[in-house]
Image (cartoon, rainbow, N blue to C red; front, side, top):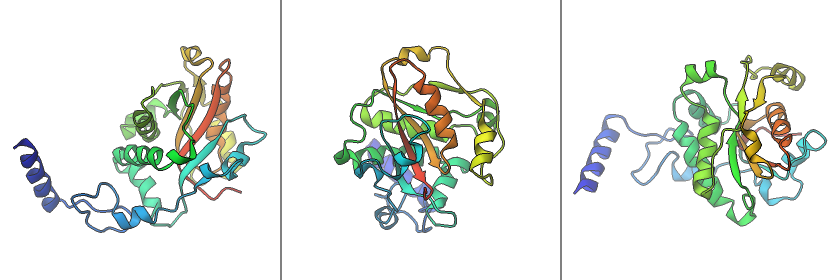
Length: 235
């Protein structure tokens, strides 16, 4: 009975304010969640996790020691799929990120990318930005992965000072912009010897991930892997 009432209320809500696919704008069917089946099937997957020393891992070589790295799909400015990141980050839809990250775990199971991960953490937001936005989109991604894997989500890093937007900056400017912005939490020592998965929403130049991974790597015995929901075309 309760299930029937919930289905009726959901249907009524969809009539009043139809759920639409952020990629193509099509109204979603009842059995479709955040993306329509067609756009989900055409998601521009990187499949980095299927290649040894892939493009993303090469990007960090010589910068910070990592075990492995992957991104779920490619981000290109102007692509319809770019709206996924925009909605997750700016349009109060972090639950879509949670769902996509959880889905990524299932889809990547055959690659064994997530095997041996002990804990999951996220690139943090400074409290001023967190207060303005109301949530950290990367935390939702990290929790989606942790919950699907059945392992802990931990807050290992602090954003100790705000930084200006990275959107229109080049690689060097991005690197300079974030120096000193992050620090290990005081209790991060409990992660000694752990394999930590560091999660962010998108990788462009990799400067933020490099700084955060370097901090985590300073934990005795810790090993680091990286996951982002999306990736720009890395060179």
